[in-house]
Length: 301
Image (cartoon, rainbow, N blue to C red; front, side, top):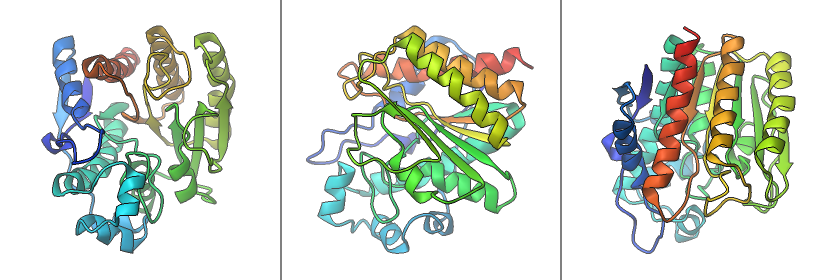
């Protein structure tokens, strides 16, 4: 059974002057329904302010909550912080935290949003307002729900915000496998970064993943994985520079899930990036990711 965290407020109208659209978060739910996969919906609560401020600069948190984000920060984010955007920016970290709690009960759960890995301490960036991965990881450890967390970021873009916010922490390992020449131009330093050449295809990508992930899992020994499962490494993605196929993404996700299951490590996924003119095609890629990971978890039950 697939356990999916979703809230209707994940979907928000495009903000004035921005080309970024939030409709894929609703389209993903349509794609899940079309698939006939069995899933259970869970609705998140907004992340309490104290946990936002445990990771982000309190002044920036206040700017978002009062919708007074300066224009230069809104430009860096890529859209204006309206009331609807503010609300979903609280719900998304709450969703990642809830997905992690559900994964601890069911082996796997998915937040049908999140993966906002570019948000920094005092500003958002790259379509990210608050860094749900860093916020959720910090809360889970602070409340004693986990001791060691791996944030596995397989989005095509480096998780620079996550790396910056969690730098120096021995209880959180950040692993980013990304296109080296893609955004952001200035990379942060994750615990481990692997930058791939433009046009990297399925076999080479999967070989690097197989050479890297088991060693990290065995050496760091996390008791929870937060997986940024961006589908933008796909060769047809508008903002990607890699060349994975649908079969490659399928193999990637199944491999990650099997490695977690083999070590009895709960895994919660976030959607991350996926961009293109055919919004439903992108939604189907995200939905397929969740479905196949749940299939692997069910097969191991």
